[in-house]
Length: 168
Image (tube, rainbow, N blue to C red; front, side, top):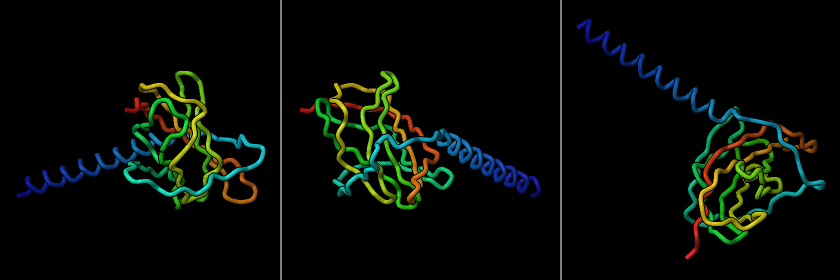
């Protein structure tokens, strides 16, 4: 009977160790923060938008600031106006400024105005039309205090794949 109890204890300990390791690695993935800065001379806020149907998005928690994560972002080829859900979770106490950066070409193809906590964007305008294909994309989150100072805070970079599909 004692041998069975020992096996159960070892199994429980192993499960706890694996759970702690999984949580630690998940936190480490989202710890790539860097400070951002407002690029507009006049602070501009994004307009509120209503959500269309069929948008999938994942979220993660990073030391009190929730940063949405993406495996991939899919947009149509040949247009600057695209539908992508961008959001600043309601629980955050900071403003977001979100940029799309193509590391292969060292090019920023989109930068939002400031996004309030709880605000969602669904329709954005890129700097240029994209050709069909798959591109490495970095979604850069610059964060700022939600007070009059609007002081830069830590940000985050989320790597994903931009999938540009030919329409038709």
